[in-house]
Length: 392
Image (cartoon, rainbow, N blue to C red):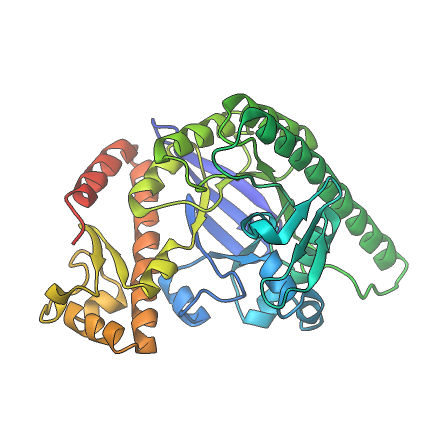
């Protein structure tokens, strides 16, 4: 199945309803991708994800490289087979994780020297190495290695990182093209390649950087477009900037990107923010919040957030969200979920995560439906008003 993207309808807000075809299935866009950093969405089985309607997951190069190792995953048939996931996978390049290491890394034009957060061992991650790892993993969509910077960052700092990101993107593309040609040559000669990509249909997305500076973001996008990637991402957001600024940067970035290719904003956002990014012309998003917050007892609902730890739920027979039709809301009470959390039962994380992921997916489904009817602005206003009514 070839990689292909088509825009089916555009809403008056600029939001796009689309369809993304990958070697491991079709994805309805705009799409929310649950984060499966280390080959698993925490507390959820792959079967549960399938039942929830998940079409694409996110995995991470940095974490899978350190444990269990990309060569081990390659020898076991690639990440899809290793984790028994039939749907599509996107792998982050490791750039954001290296950025988050702070004192454990050193960035140069060649790449990044860093120490593992697991055992302190030293590693050198280059653009070429990132692609090598992602080819071994066999994701459907690989990301270029980029330099993600802190917020706030001045213009000079952001410009240097943008320049480095553009050069790294070119090196990633050239390495991927060279490996593809080598594989084709070996296949034509009847020889086997032990280092062959585990997913020959893998495509590479560029990542727009430039801090919170509009001129740099536009220049970064133009440089990446010149490299002609099959898709593009907007990185370096959700690093502490105000939401309004995040949307402004996302919109300015996407304005420079091709209309016929998918656009992905990395690492966002809260439920009430999803439609805001979609209105920027974004087709894909991911965020750790559904599962991370679930493990801490924070549940997302159509009437705001519920902190299930609170004593007011000890005798509450209601479901988490009476508007939600997920398995958890159909089956369990707030009182029971509170009990599980305070008893430190593993089932608390499982059920909380199931609900939160279902909630995010349901919002994105409603956003797609609103775009189909040209009513995204109305849906967004009504939903945000309900959320703003207050967390409980």
